[in-house]
Structures are given as structure tokens and as C-alpha cells.
Image 1 (cartoon, one colour):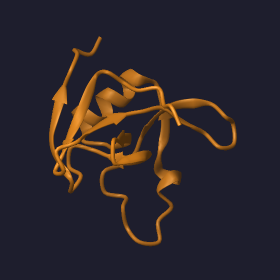
Image 2 (image 1 turned 135 degrees about the vertical axis):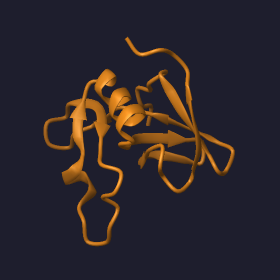
Image 3 (image 1 turned 90 degrees about the horizontal axis):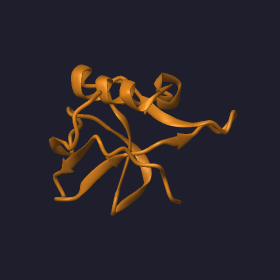
Length: 101
């Protein structure tokens, strides 16, 4: 699947690959948007999707870079969007590629 990607920042993963934030489709409304999710919600028995909110790109950038929240990302070895954030276990660094507006 071809996802619309953000060019604002990327995550460098422990594998050496880059994970890129992407828009994902809401299964109910079919709307496509970026997501913002709390960093600490990955606990057994939790529905992660219930804690994600649909946001505009600028809000996603602010949430990830300023509040350490997570967003859906793809990488070459993981083409299905998964949650990544600055404090995720497999994230080595965050590279800002363009300034926020």
C-alpha cells in the first residue's frame, strides 16, 4: 500500500533503517490522517487504537517532537504502519528534516 508520508522528521531505528510518519485510514469513516498516541499505552490487554487520535500533520509533529507521543510509521522492513515515538525501544534517534510552521 502507498501511504502519504510526512517529510518533517524520521526515526532512525536500531536496525539502521528509517521509519517515516504516515497517514492511515480510519476503518469506519475512511478518513485519512496522521495519528497521535500516548507513549506509555503499550500494555497487554489494552486496545492501542482507542488511545490514538486523528490529527493534522502539524499537530502530529508537535505531539511527537515536543510531547514524546507516538505516531504511525513505516520502514522498509515493516511496511505496515506501527506506532513509533522518540522514546520507543527500537528508536535510536529522531532527525528533523524541515522546520515546523
